[in-house]
Every structure is written in C-alpha cells, then in structure tokens.
Length: 451
Image (cartoon, rainbow, N blue to C red; front, side):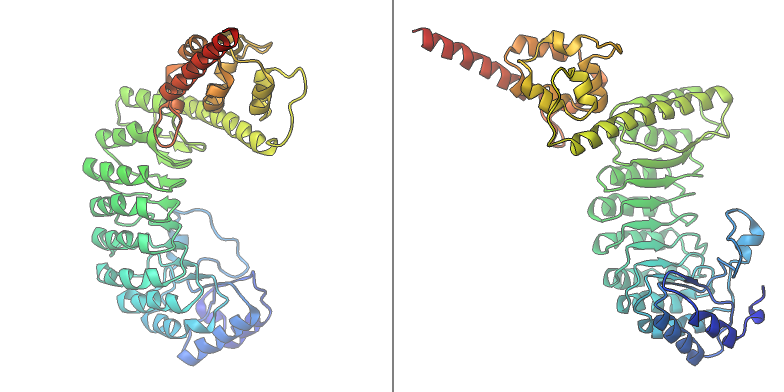
C-alpha cells in the first residue's frame, strides 16, 4: 500500500474507531503541523497507547518475522516522515499524554529533530521509545545526557543507526545510571570498545536488566571491560548473538559464564574455533555456579561433534536449573505447611519441606546425608543440585563436629561454593566452628549435671 492510498480523512476516520490497545501507524504523509495536531488530538481522545510513524505494520497485514528480508526492511522506512514532521511531533508530543510507546524508527528524523524528540520525551508519559535507523549521527550524542534522565523511559531501542558511531553509543550508555531504563536494545549498532568501557562503569550502577548488543564488535580488552560491567549488573536477559569474535575474545566470555548474573543468554558459536574451546565452553555451562536458565546458544555453524558438546551441556544446564527452580518454588509455596509423618528427607527437600523435616529429625549424621533412597538419590546429592546445602549444613541440625566434617567431605567440589562465605553466602568454616562450640557446650553441660 502506498502512502497516497490513504487520505487524511480516511486516516482520521480510522482513528475514530480505534481502541486504547490498538496500534497506530499512519499511511499518510502529513502536509502541515495542523494536520498532525488534529491526528494527535483524535488519538488522545481514543486513548491509544502505542503510536508509530514507521512502516513496520502495514494495515491489515501480518508483520513479517523475516528480520533479514531486505524488501521488508526497506519498506519499513518511512521517508515521508522526515525532519519537518518529526519537529512538529516534538512540539506537540504533550497532546498525547496517554501514549506509552512511541516509534519513529525508520523515519528520516536526523540529528536536530531527533534531539528535539528526545527532549520532548520529558514532557510526555512515554516509557518505550524506538529510534532505530533514524538517520542520526554522532552529533546527536550530547542530547542523551540532558534528555534521557528527564524522561520516564523504561525501554529504549536505539540500535541499527549506521551513522551513529561508537562514541555516540558510549555517551548514551554513560548516562544510564541517571535514567529509569530497564531494557536497552542496541542491536546492530556500532557498539565497540568505547561502549564496552562505558558499560563497565554504567551497568553496575543502572537499572538495566535486559540488554541487546547483537553484532557488537569487541576486542579482547573490550570484552574484558564489558564482562566486568555485566558481573556487577542487574542483567537477567542478554543478547550477544551474531558477534564475530576471535577465539581469545570468545574465551573471555566462556571463562566468565559461572560468574555472570544473567539467566537468559543468546549467543552464537562459530566454526573457526579449536576443539578445546568447545570443550571449555561445555564445561562452563555444566558448572553448577552458572546462573543461566535459558541458554539459546546458536550451534548451526559448528561441526556435528562440537555442536553436540554444546547442545548436551545446555540441556544439562536447563535440567539442573529446572530442578533448582522447582524446589525453590515449592519451598516458597509450602513455607507454612508441615511435613507428613514418614516423609524421607530427600522427598521432603523435593517438595519444599526440608526445613520442616529437619526440625522433626534427630541431629544429622553422615549416614543420613549419604544413604540413597529408592530412586538412588542421596540427601547430599539432592541438596547440592537444589542449592540447599546451607539448609542441610546449618549448625542447628548437627551436634557432632566430626560427623559434620565427614558429611561435608562427601559434597562434590563443584558445589562447595554454596558455603564459601562470599557475596552473602554462609561460610562452612564458621558454621563448623558453631557446631564444634555447640558440641563442647553439650559436654560441659553434661559434666556439670553429673557434678
């Protein structure tokens, strides 16, 4: 459908029938600021919450999911909405206070009008802004510091701006700690080492929990900076797909996997790496400290034997995560429930009742922890997998320090981090001292009673 196929009157008639959850993308080239004002007034009257000016969703047409389809991507551009129309929108953005999502991606906005729009966000209630491919360059960078902290934005999509270079993206990233932004999408942007250094400083201080840096180009030093920032961040969802990295650079990410807070990581592996790299990556994914719950790792370019290593490691990780999360959910849901008589300790753990079961159980012994149930599962193996070693090895449930130490010796080394005393986790050494102190006090009490 061409822009000329939809007249102003037809567009206004369509707006009049819209509901708040309908998405407005006009197929009309606004001829004057007055026309745009009338459209905004009508949109506000209808209560529409999502307004865009790209060609993303042609009327009565299902949007294409073929991201790389040149024809589709080209025709998402709306060159009829240019600097002049964007300037009109910036001046009148206050007229649509009910709008939460604003999309000017693919429009020929440019630097000056782009800056006006960003500043205008502070006079709106927009929480999601799309500014991908708006024909702005690095000269727009200074406005980020002024405009973004003044806005209510929680989601910002600013990738795919070919003329915005790494310095501009770095300027945007640097201001994140002063914003409310929780989701930042810089996919296919010129995100490189300046941005990586900015991420190192900004991520630990900001609210971003979902980040897309698809196709970013990091060197070894850049990856180190970026990973340092991720380690101290609130990131849960991270897209690092389609990044063509050297093996040494990719290895930096592999080595960091057990230390990242991220739960969902999109990442593609490439065929040019050594077999040793895939072995190390598979081992990192199998590491119980790895917090990933959803690892959609791309392996389509790998040789079958290496793809299998990664796929199997991802399945192992997902299985362990599912077990851990299920126990955690049941523990929360059953916090006020009592454990039925005769329930085994492993069964109690898997039903979220371990604390209650231990309160009714005599002081623990090595046998209690290592004896396998009918399914061949011991309490130590179940507690290790469910990350409940802190509960099992709480001093409250032990009276004998030798039994306590002997049971801990049966804990697999890869799970002992659960009581390493770091990042708020309990310390095995300190807890063992509590058990020893309790044992000594018990002996003294018995001697005093006898005396």
